[in-house]
Amino acid sequence: MPEEVRAHITGVVFQITTRTGDPVAAGDPVIVLESMKMEIPVEAPRAGVVREIAVAEGQTVQEGDTVAWLE
Amino acid sequence: MIESVLVANRGEIARRVIRACRGLGVRSVAVYSEADRRWPYVAEADEAVAIGPASPRESYLNVERILEAARRTSAEAVHPGYGFLSENWRFARACEEAGLVFVGPPWPVMATMGDKIEARRRMVAAGVPVVPGSEGAVESLEAARTAAARVGYPIMLKATAGGGGIGMVRVAEDGGLAAAFATAQRRAEAAFGSGAVFVERYLDRPRHVEVQVFGDAHGGLVHMHERECSIQRRHQKLVEESPAPGMAPDLKRRLTEAAVSGARAVGYRNAGTMEFIVSGGEFYFLEMNTRLQVEHPVTEEVTGRDLVAAQLRVASGEPLPWRQEEIVQQGHALECRIYAEDPARNFMPSPGTITRLVLPEGPGLRLDCGVAEGVEVSVHYDPLLAKLIAWGATRSEAIDRMASALDGLVVEGVRTVVPFHRRVLASTLFRAGQIHTQMAEQGAFDA
Image 1: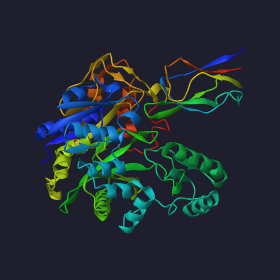
Image 2: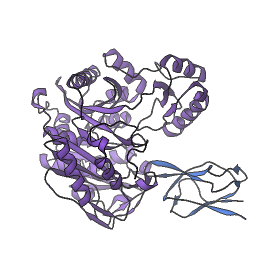
Image 3: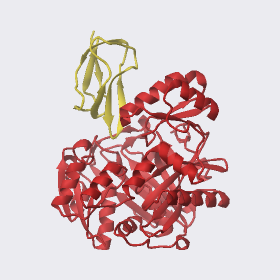
């Protein structure tokens, strides 16, 4: 089952640290958001493989938005 | 006297500078990004110029657009505030080349003190104590290992181009050095465009004490006493005060003398801050901030002097408005920074729209507030909303007044660090003046 990775805060996508097909462990950063001068990683909720990155660097995301899909 | 000043900043500090301009009869020019159109400082300036989109790179960090705004409004001087371009010597030089007065030190001094390794060298030469560490950047893991062995573990790896605690990594023992060295280099490269790092001894339970200095173009250079800024999170200050509680008179004398010697050695002019780490009875130079500090109000409240007005006078070529012996600390002042961060979620940013704002009033209270109801607190900028400053005849009175002020402050629409401040003020250790920079991280003020 694919699972969404959601932003836990509002911010701007600072860096995309994974690519489609990358294996990740639970807690690994999938992307990094920048909010109010802080860099905040959005972590994988479980182990899996990155199926899709749903955002681009520089894009603003709201709290709760899907930033990636894991499978 | 300068007749007009463009304020190359936003929020509470822009408001602070505009207020000082008004007091001196100086025309003020605000600049603002699309996100800040409705912020109070924009309406309060005599003129305001839109300089671009919300992203700082397109607005407050964009030298060309700021210089263009100065040209269009015939501003004579630029006040950089803090953050953004305030410590960027290339910006100061660009102002000078454009015929503008930069309200700050000469740009070569900024360049020297902005380079941590060069600053350290200059301070050693001036007889100012520095934290034991590598003499310069460590180019390789082996060089880092040699330096660390000489300095003694635990150590810190720091970015040479760094500031604000960004890119710092603590290393407890030799076994952790390789991984930490790679992390520090990567962070430094990402944050500052240079992966150069240096080694410094890590000090246990240090206090952060800084000295306000002020120089003019006529050879005048004074200190305006110390500020204690040990209550921090992620190496960023949250609470500041003056005087530093419980500091021995002899230590204080040596500290202020060292600050003046160091600033004089580099030909410092205008307002600046010499930051020190105090550990045991010793102190070490940390860095110099070649600008006005966020926490300058505590110095203003205990000395009764307006630092921003003095900055404008000195930038105009006037001599310092005070002599050293006239600057005395009276009573005690405390500042709490009101950040839009959630202390219950590890100080996560809390952007949003301010839906309700009630500001406290009371004796000895000062509020440097950047926001108003209805403004949006954007993800693009520092989360500082306001600064509460309480003065009292004694430290204890200042703390009590601050506690009342926090109770009277209402901010709705974003979360703030106010609950954290309440716990700090209620803490027995804080009340006893037994503070150090690692307290918050070690959970001393946890709920």
